[in-house]
Length: 557
Image 1 (cartoon, rainbow, N blue to C red):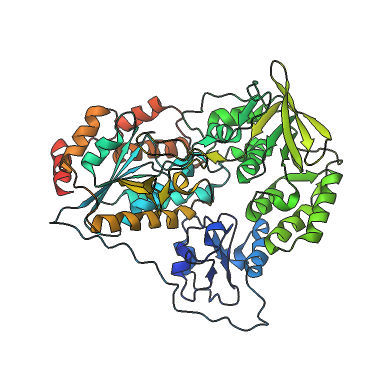
Image 2 (cartoon, rainbow, N blue to C red):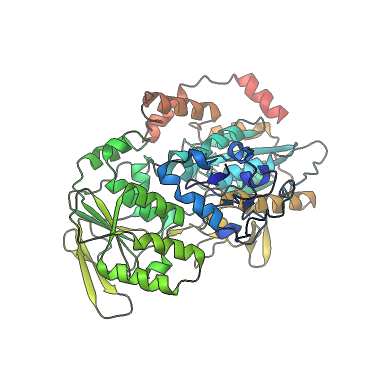
């Protein structure tokens, strides 16, 4: 009864190091790890010990006998990653080599103090890596009153298993030498240089918060938005909660076919009664209940073999939704399959060949993949009424009527005040996480996550990315390259509260978290607060830590 990794795999890699027979690959030290769509358990080598189940932060692993019908394809996907061995047991080792934690050479009993800007997965994994050592203090700064970034506001509400990674982050945040400073915006409330006055180093893990934009006519029309805005809206992000989306038309066009596009299409076509059991924002659920959308077209510039979505997400989509192709795209899929040599591409194409035909009657809201369509312009005068495409590589023009147009062509990082920025790549230039100005390192400045490497990988990919940055930071500290802070640790709390009196600490976040869960009344995981004012009112209700204890904690840190 071998174990199987399923769709919600986040590529964290914790399972790799827990496995006693080294049967989970690719591992973080292998070349394919950074680009792998998921990890895979070798069914021949697996000894059914269950260690990986306990290690997985998102509950993605189960025995093959306990999989749902939707998960059964992952038995073959896991096995298919490994070459056929004619029944021979593969060579194994006792454990996969666990990367060594960076050893911190503290000076004179004074701790290494690190500020992390951002609180998403890259930030929390960096904090975890730093706090494997004693003599380290981590302060995390986040502009929202709630932490965890895209793990909270980016993961689709019907992917609750993936959101379970926040349980791990809660554990990290409960450590004695970790402190949250939420509702504090670095660059506005505090500056980079001021953080360096209180820390040896500042590590930015701020993600890639903006979208790449299509440069075509009509993009400024009402009815045109980005998938990122739509995702933030249905996830209750306070900066996007007041947006409105017109779902009164029968069709929505999404430009781009990555995983985010699939998330948006799935939410638009899922029965609202099903979504009502998730943590989707109430305003989004109300809008979806009155939606008249019957079809979502996911349009891609290239052909089926170049589809940007991952195989696990495609399997999940086709198991839950009606997904169809036009006859011309069915032929394109068959043509690409005949020429495909890559196993992963072949698996995607084989699933696409089994999709229904778009000529069939629409019995419930459906999704249609459309290929080789290059966006030409948004149609409409006072608002968007459709999208005009040019068939890629030809002069042929195709127009699709649509009540709304969403673009999903990738994310982009934003410049950070006080640091260099690579406009073409949308990242902060760096070497192993060390910020570079030309060829010279910027002392005390580091990056991790998407602002470091660009918008690639999955939640768990940030773990190895953050570990690399932390190793660079600690090496610089041990070499004496980081300046000593100009203030005692106890001065930071007073300084931050002087700049932002409404700072939310860990107790305030716990109060928000508990209140959201209580609002779910056991029927939903939580009902989110969608305004900063609401969050601050709830956070203010948390029992205040006595001043003398806060001062004592600062002295002990």
